[in-house]
Length: 483
Image (tube, rainbow, N blue to C red; front, side, top):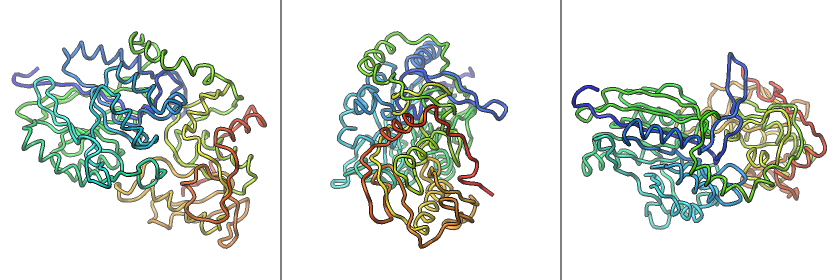
């Protein structure tokens, strides 16, 4: 190493969604999908211990959120089972993702109290008092470098998610909150570098790096980008490391006179061949033991590989919306365009798989919507994903559907992206009322004659497998056609 140059190493995981053990992971090879098993906190912990030894402890494992929500055991323990594993694997610092709020702020406070590491976010406060919900930042000296870490999370918690997620909280935009924190850390704490621990999403993080001075590194999350090399935006380095814990990002940073003078990056696959860290594996087995039988119950079979790795339509969500239609007899079924959910290869499908497909398990409703209202809802979804201003993008994919087809131009302005819309096999009628099935009451903002179906999403999926197994949910390449 060059004289007078200090080096530290950041190890990143983001959007692990509670996948404590190895799972099937989706890879692309020559434009075709393939699946192999990867991930698991115990194998990730082995990598972390190896890097700690290689760097003489001059490293830090940072978690960028969406961590304690997303699987059956996470839901059944309100995240508590996951916290024990995070403590065992050695997480050093975390920012909350939007799904950390999925059990409500009160439960999140309980989980944060159980964590043996700080949780930071500069843009969340209690609405009634203005008091910060989390410490905004944390200062660490690593490898002889004094570093200011600032957390920032997505404000969609109170914009697009169920009201209970952010009840009593107020979220500001990251671009508003960060400059003050950066100035304070530089002035009062004399930090040499600023590292932003973000759960805003890649487009927003790139824009932050362009518009806000003084950020040296952004460890990103929320949009599940599997970046094989850092993105450089001016003087800022930006990385994301996939999702579901299948990868860790390793960033070596060289510092001289308070400035980054070099770096190395490696996106490390958490391969199933890695020997699990014994202590972390013991904790995971202890936490999962009460749920093994429930998770392993076979509910049916699939001929289709189920995943969410495609933007306009996915096989996993075709299963959901087809199940909603089958149960309700509606004209149209709608479901949120989530990114999470590890793939499920052809073969047996378990109850544990269903809870990974849709861990929120929303109650089902039907609602009457006019053709014009359906079109309006689709346009809103397209804007949330493809807004020209990155700060207006909400993360996730476009709304998932059965019973309709649309021709869209994604680069058109807001409200004008749908060029053709067919519903129930015919051109849509703006005045006609259609019966629409949805999961979750918060998804119903327009329409009339709301009715409870008397079933949850997972109950609908179980019934669908009972009636139709082995199921098929292939891509139609026609639900949304981009031209």
